[in-house]
Image (cartoon, rainbow, N blue to C red):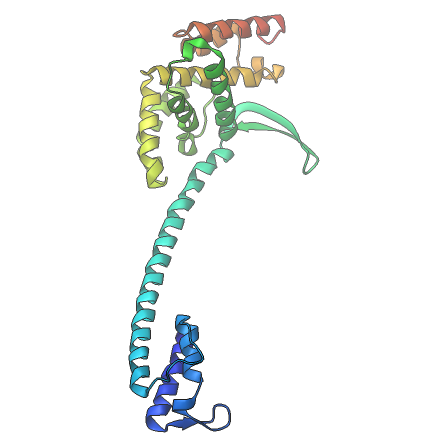
Length: 284
């Protein structure tokens, strides 16, 4: 647009100082089509074949209006670009949450990659644990009458964010009791630091949900804690060899997991069923 405007300015400068140019052989400026073509490209103004020809003074007024318009438009575009870049950089903070995909837990995760045709034997990631916890939580919410009055959105949000702090602290196996106590203290200290890295709109949500989950005083937070522990048990049913290697004896399983279930008859019922399965199949 600036190039076309300069072309129009050049035309009017020639008109004022010379009144003719060699556009289309030899043309008087007041008969030339070039200014009208420039005007059309700059403003998309409808130009009819029978419109009155403009004088040099008319063109000077047109040019002043065009300059004012284009300068305002350039400023608007610059502001929009600045806002767009700022919004985009804030949006990209979401990648901080994606780091959960790279945080390993102590649970096994063996699978066949059909894309690369490779058999993987690795650890489950925190992101995978969160995903399966959401599915498991949804199962209990839909199937068990005890939980019918829970705030379902709050439950799912608690599960979604409950292990985000492990981006900074990493995961500690439930069998490492002393380290887990120290981890809990470290998490409370570091959660504000993690929140700073999140998009503003999710910063406050992370802090509020983390506090509710940590205090474990609402029905929704108790449910989320129970699902977190239940998910680990169900996941490891796929890997019988892991249990004794990780000190998952019957005594320890009851000591480490049962406290999260005791508030709920439903969760205790499922826990007892899992214990029976573990005994009968020589897991513990």
